[in-house]
Length: 377
Image 1 (cartoon, rainbow, N blue to C red):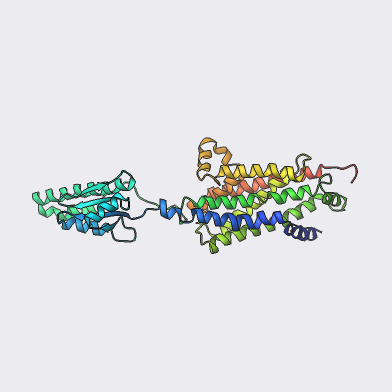
Image 2: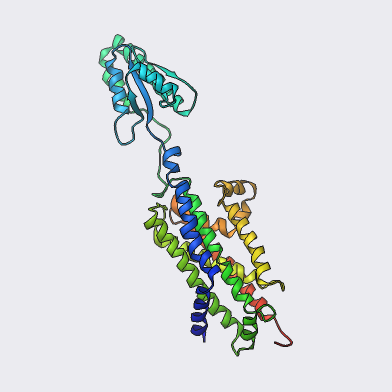
């Protein structure tokens, strides 16, 4: 009987156009594509460090400065990109804001800029450091030329109290969190399935509920079979979205596909359990409960950063306890922690919390279902 209910639960859900739209079409084809168009290359063009475009105008030949500029303009991640060496063209480019500044090569190089900003400050700092080091070398050459090799070597190997350590090999794109929130929203919208199951099990709310209650089958068995069927469909929708993001949109999610599927599976379980539990409260119809739960789920997604990227960080400062119980924030944090820190205690804590929420809400839904009695059908 379990397999029979399981099979026909899947078939009936596939015939529901609303369910198919929210489960397969909206998150995958519409939202994922729009997110890729909006955020796909935003990090590379605005946040990621690019070579600073400058012009270099030679006022006086300086071999040492030429060598230094050559070294910082080469390599995989060059600091500067020399656009032109013509002074007249450089002034026009600076006026049009096509370059950050003009570096005048002389005995003591100097800089001309049209405005202030981070990139202008970097160029200024570079020139200041060069002038200081140049003066040190000249002073050492006058005092004791034999000390020059040691001095130059110490400049090339400056002591730095700060060192870089990679926490993970994930994607450091700040906008990747929008895609994490997209997957979280899709998982939580599985509440539609849980809501439909418990509504269809109530004789006072639907014709299907009358037939279900009249059938000689235990309510718990019917509910479990229905929940299992809906979980398969919800997980299938998440699989399609994950594969679409990775293989069609070529999005580097920073998390391996098996881990992503595990997170979406647990998230889908939590979403279904939310609909299953809250659908059993009160005697309101499906449409009214659906409207209330849609507002709740969208509010949870908003607070996890679906609309405003740093919202979860704001909540973490103002009310950190809420991020520990918000399913959307927990799903997003699973992706974030796996991407940034790898699979560790934080990841397992989030997964375990989602499993506990699922278990509590599912058990609560079962209790609400069993307590319902009807004088007649």
